[in-house]
Length: 162
Picture 1: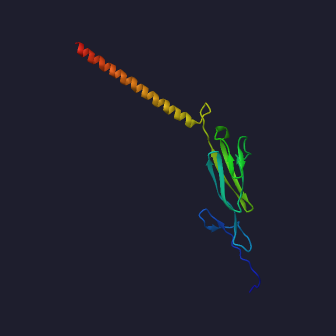
Picture 2: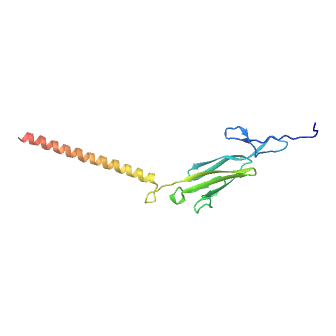
Picture 3: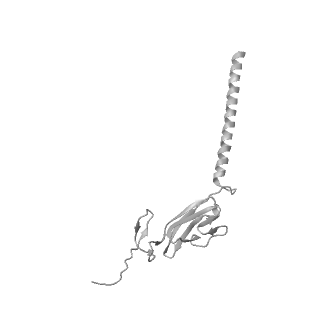
């Protein structure tokens, strides 16, 4: 028999389903606080850029990069937020790295913005084209109806004059 003070430490990680498993986790002695590295890094599109979030304890610090390089001019990172315009010049693979003292995890998002030749977003060009097309179709139908009416009047006039 081995006498003495023994501390049994169960090392666990909380998964995205809420279950605990694995190792690479710390437990503060004398408390029931569980510390674990960032997991489940998610990147969400916002109106003015992206937001990164990760499940971790302690809360992670966030770093952004584009295709493994520093961010290009016109792109600004503040904590877990990335501010940018959705223009083709900024297309590429963006990475959000979440880190704390227990580890690091990454999330990735590809920006693929499309604009027309005028620099306007393609969706605006499509909407304008559809409206223009609808107006053109309405005008053509009126012309065709008008021609048909003229032809009908000619036929009726010929029959009356005969």
